[in-house]
Image (cartoon, rainbow, N blue to C red; front, side):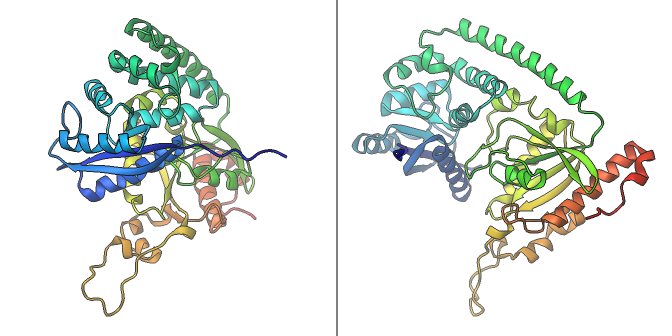
Length: 402
């Protein structure tokens, strides 16, 4: 009989600040997300520390009084890891590590670490390694002594832990080598994409953990890895799908996130080529998430960065089975109705009504409204196909045949 192995989560505290650009509600949203990121990386959050500041302290990110409060808590509760919600400068990292004598990780490093855990293929591992080296390069001075003392766990996967003596020259050489390696693989992948013929290409895009892989499994009847953790998918998966008698290619891509490290956007640009070269985007949204509108904006921002805002897009509002709204009692005259009180029907009458039939509401996990989804995708793919090949018009009826 196999023994059940308990997962040992690292005790972790989170730190974030309230600024003129980030109020308390927004900070709490980011810290909720940071907690989920920490859990995904293998950490257990036991406390959050927040402070109101105009701008972050240039030396220690938070003020000296708050830093002392954190230091005492870390010491008394044997906290191994402290995670900051924003990217720390090399100087801040050194100063904080010297004060707290614990492993210090910022949001960028945490996301890179999750990518390092999740990378399965040689291509994904190369992309992550490049991003990690680009992050490490300006932080080399004080990092190696920190790594010598405490290895392993969150933020310690990747190039740092085995190359303590690495200097800037060697790291720069490694970055150059990895870039060349990626360029070679990129050419191979571009050739592969070119060899897929003239099939219409559809890409699933969206925030991380919105259900893209689950939807892919339902539509393509495939087994793409899907779980309730962030960045379950790193490598782009492409499947040939047939709806009615119309074949097309469907690709599942890496999920986006707010405050996505620039190193990752850069090193994963080629993965996003699947999005760039797609004929149709299916923008999947977790409508049950309280901040789904922010998620849409974040995805649109990254799509703009890779010049994909003008592509045909269908908004797919997923997880309608999990959607919940707050209610107001009839005799309650003090509570003002907000978006949190909207039913799904009321949401459909907001800005969503302007999308028209380019907005679909489904539950991929319960296969709710999937038939409507398939018909809508068929209609769009058929339109693209017969525009490209007018002589194939008679092969595919305007309405999908069951």
